[in-house]
Length: 444
Image 1: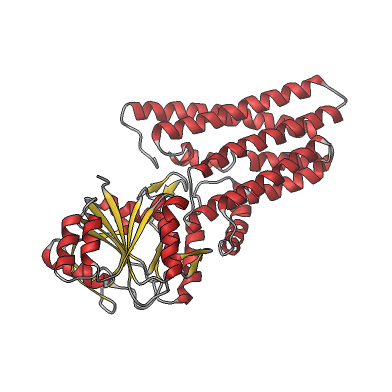
Image 2: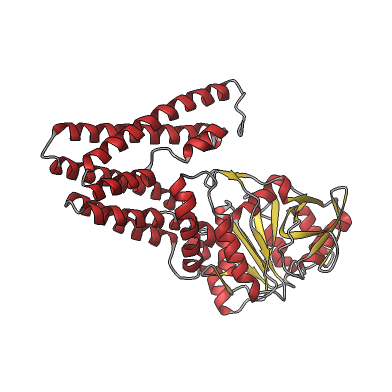
């Protein structure tokens, strides 16, 4: 028996379920988000036209989520479908959100409704009246905190509410019926914001009630800016971040997929390697700066569209491939332009070894502890701003191209890689020893 099913209610009002949000129909985006949260079954209850029903029919083959459509009054059909599950994620289809909202609901436990105090939400967002953590009432104009659009309920509660005449499409009324019979707890999102290893920070899930089409651009902006990683090097934070966010906002409404963006970035990155190998160092270094910005777009697009995939994780492997090709091609050019001095090749080998060693330490630490090495302590976060990586090495390569001294740039890159590997190793040993003793404290 599969344990969790999503029940996506499509109440009247708000934006239509096929309204485009970040380039995808809202309903399709919900299904992508379910997949991202590990939920593979969905019951969609409400009125849908032929295009919407066809979208659901194709969802299992296309994205791996089995979605079935039911009319609001088909109570027996809904109950029969729910018999295969123990827990139900009740999702109000008028909301837009990221997968962390569903993870927060499951973290809160069964018998809970997620609430938030977000003054940016539009007028008409359902409000929750709470007393001692228990939901007392829900309505649009009520005072109190806002309902965040998701509740996590035992199957029995859903069955009881359906048999008593409540309809999922009356989202607020349905939860109110549940709250009349059971202790439905209100869980504030601010209290359960999970740590997201991809963004290297605790994240309060992004959500928005879509009262009208005017709320769609606001949701898009919140999703894009909410994807931002916390700990980055100085170039990524001060230069790339604002450019990436603006470009992602523009690209999010296009049909461009994250994987297509990855392929485009790889193609341009290989052109950089070709330019370096043919000794066009300045052109290669300038194009490398553009690639460094492009590299951040696929991940942000994936999180904004809800289209993260396991295949997309290979993007990190492709990053490694083209980065190493840059260093090898640049080192070859430096060797040639130096008149064939062998020590230049020795420096290149050292740079590659230390850079690979530092990368592997970083990867192993995250695999062992579940968080990034650069997020553990203030020193680690500070060093992350200046540690050796592609964004910083690109500046060395640009300087070497401008001044005609690529071998000097290579020496600086090798020293920076050595310094980074040494500090990473020392810090990883320290933190892993603390973890072995049960004393690892993040943030101290």
